[in-house]
View 1 (tube, rainbow, N blue to C red):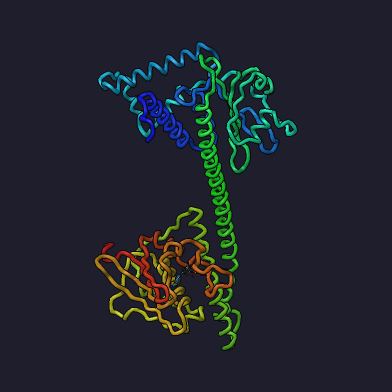
View 2: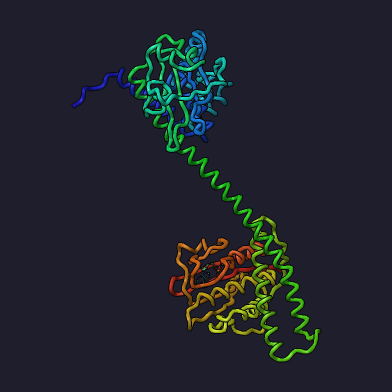
Amino acid sequence: MSEPATRGEFSEALRQFALINRITIALSTAVGTEELAETLAAVVVSPLGLGFSRAILLAYDTQRECFLADRAVGISSVEQARQLAAQLEAERNYLDALWRDPAALEEDRLPELMHRLQAGSLCVEALERQGCGPLGVPGWSDICVIPPREDPADPFARLLAEPSVLCFDSADAVHALPEPLNSTLTAPFVAFCVKTNKGPRLAVLADRAFQPDRTISGKDRSLLEWFRSQLTLAWSSAELYADLERALERQRELDTLKDNFLATISHELRTPLTAILGFLDLVLAQSAGPLTKDQNELLDRSRRQAAHLLGLVNDLLVVAEHRAGSAHDLPLGQVDARTALRAALYRLRTDPKAEKIPIVEPKPAREPYLVLANESALERIFYHLLHNAVKFSPPGGEVKVRFDRVGENCYLAVEDRAIGIDRSQMREIFSHFYQVDSRLNRSYPGMGIGLTLAKILLEATGGHILVESQPGQGSVFTIVYPSWERAI
Ligand code: ADP
């Protein structure tokens, strides 16, 4: 059994706990290395933190391999130290009084105290408030310390070489510091270096000048050691976060470049393709002279391929423009789903696989199947769903199109008995250029934009899409639009 703790030991442990808690919150609320350096300085000099008088921060320049002036904070006179201690004491007494009797609260301080209490900011703000302003160190901004490699006893060379907190007790150590640090710091002083896996980042030097007791105890050292390791972690995370942000920004820039490139190239391809189609139409209409049956057949095939190509280019353009943020003006109106389906099936004729996989259409009905949509958009959506259903079907497969009406909605389903889609891929398949099998030598051709386009067009025309799928069994893609009756 260990010795029972005394009241004194208990209140000391409680103080230590509160201090560690304050510092942890302060570090965890700092975002980015700049804010972290600010918090670090406040923690070192605040009597509510580590209680040093001055903290000098030097940033490490990796390229020039030297330490440069970053910031210096603290107090510069005994009088200031006394004022700070008195201010802290008054505040502590006030909070103690409030703790015992909340009625002691002065009304006008209520909003400020309430604000500080919220979300633990009391700790951070208290630390910063009780920290001290910038130190006026003459010649400060010129500091550039190049640690001498050949002198391992040099304080800065040691800082780079040793991972722990160093404590310098003698006046000689102060003299060994370069100007103006040697005329600013007093013995004893502590120094440590924040190092991440990218190398040294920051040197911190601190002393207890102007305080009645300037000693640096073993307890101070172990607390500083803990602080250094927490700081290193926080600094590493901040750097990682900054790296990620930079990478994300770069990714966004590349994405924009790619989208712009796609939009430009699609525009450029569209003009000559439209011209080719126009000329082919003229020749097919025999405006340039009569055609033999074979010539007609060949030119008709060329026309269909050119029209297919133009369709692909137009699809790419919609996706690229959507990504670039330009909205598409797609007027809504009364659309017969059968007409749109028929047009999609006609476009599908260019796909040789469509000849091998039967497509079962909805049973003929006397009434048209009217939805509130945009006809050309619906045709394109049908085309892509049917194209996929056919493409991913094994030999002997079949595709069925079903139209249903439930309440005020119309459900236009394309059902296949193809390879199916794994649950984990359901969301991804609607991302542009995403293909479940993305190998270059994959079995199924395609640009990976069919479903993206369908989603863009549906969103632009007040519809949405549902997917059910079982790997190895097949899929059902269902377009949902309001029925025309609902719209009127
Ligand atoms: P593409 O078909 O050109 O690859 P899509 O955007 O149309 O691009 O489809 C994205 C991906 O979704 C396809 O590559 C495929 O992996 C999957 N997919 C789409 N429709 C089906 C389907 N009917 N059956 C199985 N997988 C499909």
